[in-house]
Length: 357
Image (cartoon, rainbow, N blue to C red):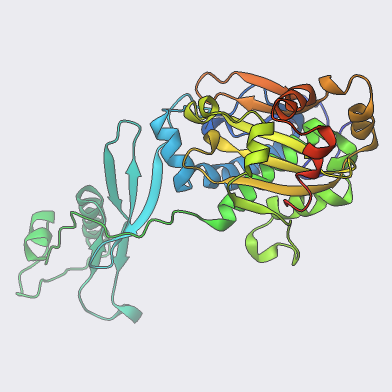
């Protein structure tokens, strides 16, 4: 039986499903324009659920991805367009959540907070939140005091025995704006999201020998852990940059691909024909950083396929249209034709990637 590419547990086909039951994983998250044509079945239910909420959600909410999701009106698994959610703080220090909905309407919801005097001392009570939440809290306080046979007085000495009396005696501050700093690029969320895509794509293209070998281990460690627990060494290359022109040409990343915001994920052989790198370009690299980093030794079977007479049919990657969800494979034959049309041979194309990572 196969193993989970993230948790490395042996998968089962149990019904009802448990944490180790095999599930379908979208290699590019569905909410970011992924496709049913680019999936792997080798992911446990537990990993799918945990990483979906912990990694995919944070990745899809990073500003470059969130902007494209709303611009293209991409639906999530629920069939709805996932809102953009940010945290903010009012000028008076009240924290809240800012939500930008699919229709562009912005909602601001203040956190509910109650501050009472410490150690049971007598003094003012501060209540923060939406008006509805504040009134509900005050009603609860009144009910509690009545149950305990307690009474409360305002600073003017008047009895506070009703909601109206409490509201009239209180000093009210209305918050109509939140001051916030929007983080354009959260490195942890971005790194884990990109490497999760790379690990799953590498598994689909190169197979289990690579996935459970030493070269993929560092990818897995980063995907499965918060930044505080990342390994000291990290993959070389870049997770937020721009692909070299030679790579873009080889992969067929034309102006049309860019203008249609198409995703491209592909394995690129390096100069010696034995090692490889992986390129990830989301939304055509149109306002979204691209990534490319080495993935170590290519499996023997993959190298043999590239050296065989049928090398042209070897699938090197995939292109996904995030709006139609149509997925198209990228073969080595296509790459060869594009490079040859511009002059260099196969070997020269491979040599172009020496040291690029």
